[in-house]
Length: 230
Ligand code: DC
Image (cartoon, rainbow, N blue to C red; front, side, top):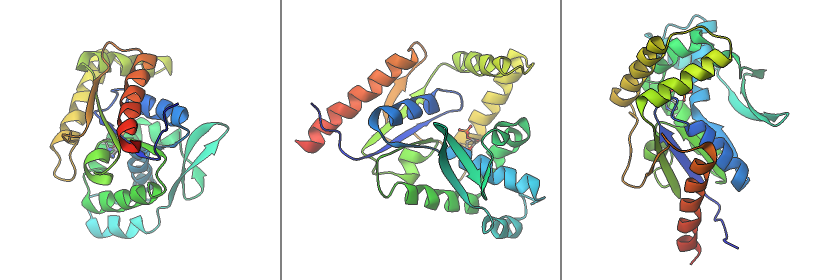
């Protein structure tokens, strides 16, 4: 039997590329905690919206950060995002939050606070975290780093299916426009843009099933762990 070393697994990639699906499944397989770092930026966005915090006013944003407490709790088997004691898991998926979060995620003080929190969560290792800067900034020394990509039209189709399954009426063109806009902000912003480091393992899941994607990642983890325990 292969010994799995206690590690941090970092998973980065563009929106709707399947990285959180992989992160959740890997966490389950390895018995690790799954942390959705995007949910933390979404939680900050929700707080700013609900409390009328002007995101262009850095002093107001900095002051508001003192009142933001984010944690994750396992509620009936799913990973709930808790903001100041309230379960906001569904609320942070709303369009209201989605439309603002990319801007919020460009704010330096917000990123500094979230990164610190994420690093604290990873102190005990045994964690799978997905996001944009996990392998480059949050855990540059993570034992395992994956960078997930998929063809843009396939990502658009997946996102469109996800929205229509939830009963939302939206055109494929609008989904594509929104996705490309978010890709642009995420990869060109000044603070911690989405970056693939030389130590990220690239997985293109355009034509992989979920199960195949999981197998590919597990194969890499086991192969690397063999060298770590050797
Ligand atoms: O993965 P997501 O769509 O929930 O992320 C929401 C936003 O937060 C998205 O604009 C990218 C940003 N984000 C980030 O800048 N850094 C992270 N580690 C995770 C998400």
